[in-house]
Length: 161
Image (cartoon, rainbow, N blue to C red; front, side):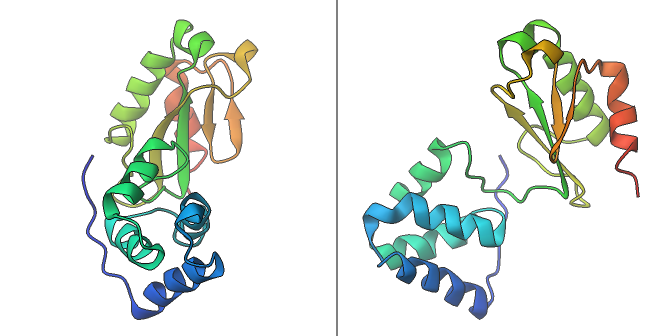
């Protein structure tokens, strides 16, 4: 995964410090702090993780470990329209891998990346809970069922504006 270098503004740094302070700069609140910070910035680049580590007195390695362990956290910005392909058992068996390959081809990105224009990002999910509609794709909050590789272009066209 490519690392994105981010230059934080002073007000951003202060906002991160304020969030840490709101949790008492308590190392035991690391997950809550990261959750709130990601809610503000949309993702957790290395520069943000370093400030969190410094403020709540834990190592950068510990912060990085938490960010990479929990799938909710991301170190890259999500696109305006995040595309998530379910790769749970039912979806996988019914061809999710081919659908995923088609999204990668159409968007020109790998899983975990965003398009250069910031419009789309691509991730995989474990289970959406719509197994009867497998394979399932989510774009933002919209769910598409029984998606075939041929249907990928049509789904992406809906977001051309």
